[in-house]
Amino acid sequence: MNSADSATILGPILGIETSCDETAAAVLDAEGQVLSNIISSQQAVHERFGGVVPELASRAHIQNIDEVTGKALQEAGLGWRDLKAIAVTQGPGLAGALLVGLSYAKSTAYALGIPLVGVSHLEGHIASAWINRPDFPRNCVVLIASGGHTHLFHAEEKGGFHLMGRTIDDAAGEAFDKGAQMLGLGYPGGPLIDAAARKGHPTAVRFPRSRVRTGQFDFSFSGLKTALLYHLQSMSMEAITQQQADLAAAYQEAIVDVLVRQAFAAVERAGVSALAVVGGVSANSRLRARLADRAVKEGIELGVPALSYCTDNAAMIAAAGQRALLQGNVASFDCEAMPDCALPTWSGGGAVRRTS
Ligand code: KG4
Ligand code: ZN
Image (cartoon, rainbow, N blue to C red; front, side):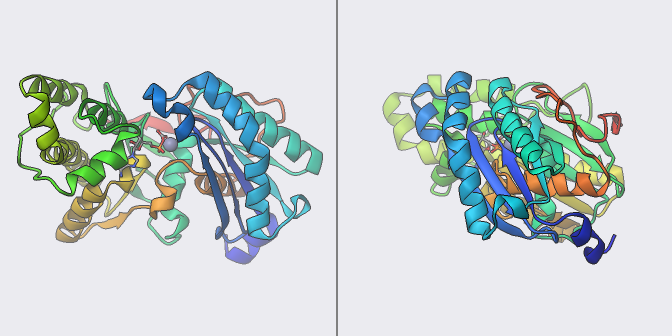
């Protein structure tokens, strides 16, 4: 479909994301350009608990959502009546948190008489790879590495997803978060390890790089976490503090090594020439550098989102919603939140097939 056709069908779309601890809203124009991307982080609410507290997350979403969507419209220079559709994260995520965004999206779409699109959060992350690069190949391998997921998909030209591998225990982002906690760096751990590691040596300690028997493209990070724990138990507090940067760099390197190894192996197996890496962990500077290096060496086209679209945001939800809408996937107003939903919601989940 050319852009003139899509402009007629789509018009501006509002995306809403409340699956975890960010209340986010964004507006995209008919061409998929981001007009606004507002994120209200709840980091201050959850920080002292060392993780997200579901009940507090729901409450904060309720408090923030009206202001966040209002800001998104204002920054886009649009009013409610200019919108042609509303896309919202339907799942996976925290049930109470999802319900806030979904109820808000349903009621506003209903009041405005415009279509509602339910989007899988994972599909949103996947769509983020195309926000700044609409010409990036659709036939590619996608690595999603976030706080809750580490999945490798072969994405097909027409929108089907073959699951090639996934973590059998912790997600990559979780490994970052738990590692940071053990290293005394704080929460959320990914950006803190990333920053600390810049001053350290990735070869200072050799942490394990797991291989999983269940599937060639699966991941496992729990052994790495335990290895860090044992390593720290063998050190004095003083030594840990002194060597914090080296430990962060070495631990990060172990996660990055596995992600890069598995992603490129999947590219080879899928027989494609493009790799998209998305999700919060794709913001990691070492991962981005290592992926870029390897992609150049192997002649693979690499797609990583701009930093503002790596961690949870609503621009990616609007982008996925726009694509869904183009394929005629409109949600009914009695659709429910899907805390455990697979991917994608709008193509019925049936498009996900395990290939390894
Ligand atoms: O995609 P996301 O915002 O939320 C989920 O869907 O889970 O991902 C959050 C995860 C957290 O675990 C966070 O520590 C990690 O992404 N993360 C990073 C970086 N920035 C965020 N991990 C490594 N390096 C970073 N720079
Ligand atoms: Zn996410």
